[in-house]
Image (cartoon, rainbow, N blue to C red; front, side, top):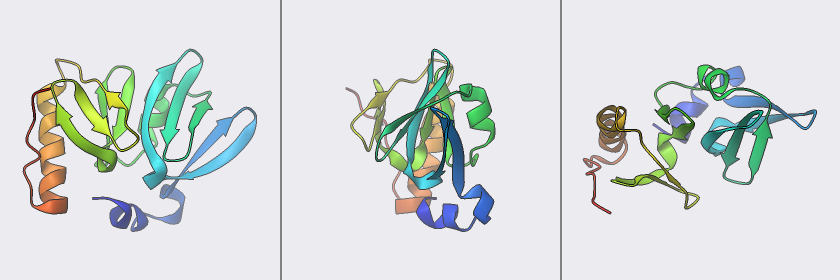
Amino acid sequence: LGKEQIESLSKEDRRLEIVSDRCRFRLPLYDVVWAESARRGCLIHSSRAAIPAHEPLASLESRLARPIFLRCQRGFLVNLCHVRRLDTLGFHMSDGAVVPLSRNSRAGAAERYRQLCLLRHGETGEIRNA
């Protein structure tokens, strides 16, 4: 999974349309690194900038490609293609952020990450201790 799989989606599904500060953005899905709940919506962290959006995280999640994006905690959503490693602290993202995992989602999230690693690299994506 990654840029190639995202590009195989229809043109409408390859980009995420976001309204931020009354401006409309069309962000390529592969640029979305992770997102978090914020006071009046969510904050989308892309490979270029953090973009505030006036949309609940659940609504954003429903518009994203399921196999690539994972809700790892109530207030966080990650693009598995941008995960560099997973340890007891959480997902270590390509932008340097560490996104925490909830206890309830740890096993499922770890399995999804392992599956992605196997598909992309033939690796197991072992969980490391911090």
